[in-house]
Image (cartoon, rainbow, N blue to C red; front, top):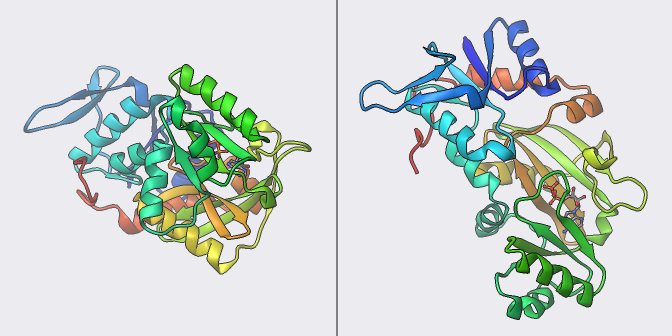
Amino acid sequence: MKIAVLSRNANLYSTRRLREAGEARGHEVDIIDTLHCYMDITKSNPTVRYHGQALPHYDAVIPRIGASITFYGTAVVRQFEMMGTFSVNESVAISRSRDKLRSLQLLSRKGVGLPRTGFANKADNIKDVIKNVGGAPVVIKLLEGTQGIGVVLADTNKVAESVMEAFIGLKANILVQEFIKEAGGADIRCLVIGNRVVAAMKRQGAEGEFRSNLHRGGSASLVKLSPAERATAVNAAKVMGLNVCGVDILQSSHGPVVMEVNSSPGLEGIEQATNKDVAAMIFKFIEENAKPHNTRTRGKG
Ligand code: ADP
């Protein structure tokens, strides 16, 4: 098959591994820089142009869209969908997953376990929001944050109130969550492909750090999932409409709770921790599912 990886940087581990794994399975793999794509939006023949030429037909695209380019990146993916190219994750699902609050609302509607979460826009409502999620300690998160930046643990109600006031004063969108203390600074990253968890790792935050992000010095190890954790991850991916994603779970005293669903999960940490060829599994999924116009939304909605 002819497959394009949409990525800003051909040298990133995940991008390199995707090229390698695809070629090893006999595919022709091109790395296309998402931001260098431009679009010809016409009634009869939508195209994606690149360096002065229309791109050839691809059977499938693998979007690796970073959070900072969500708007433009999803437009490029949508254009491929309109051309009948199969996208591993659909543009609509990627946009959906990028809004943390919207994701939590969708997951809660389908009964997926979540940390108790509140959201407010006005400083007058802060005290009540904190009370509703169970009072301090609480975690306050910037909706636009990634890699643990803008995630604050407030130990007392007073601290929570002033941090929230400050964020709201800066017109930042924030959510407030019960602090899952029993997770002990660790979370579980489940890599879901199709409707299966194909690899999972436990990430433990550095000493004295409640955030387990590997970018913040967390360390990864192999973990065996409970049936409830496995079902939660698969369910979360399904609700979000993502075929390939990373589902981050905390082990709480009231069962597994989903923190986030990531539509462009990094492959380095998970492949190294589990010794699994996740990149090859993504191509296997494409081989089994990529048919022309086989996207649920074709860019609609
Ligand atoms: P980001 O998307 O920026 O990585 P997360 O919401 O994933 O932000 O939070 C970063 C880290 O902080 C998580 O990996 C987890 O270890 C920790 N964390 C986040 N929310 C909670 C919570 N409600 N209770 C306990 N720990 C949390």
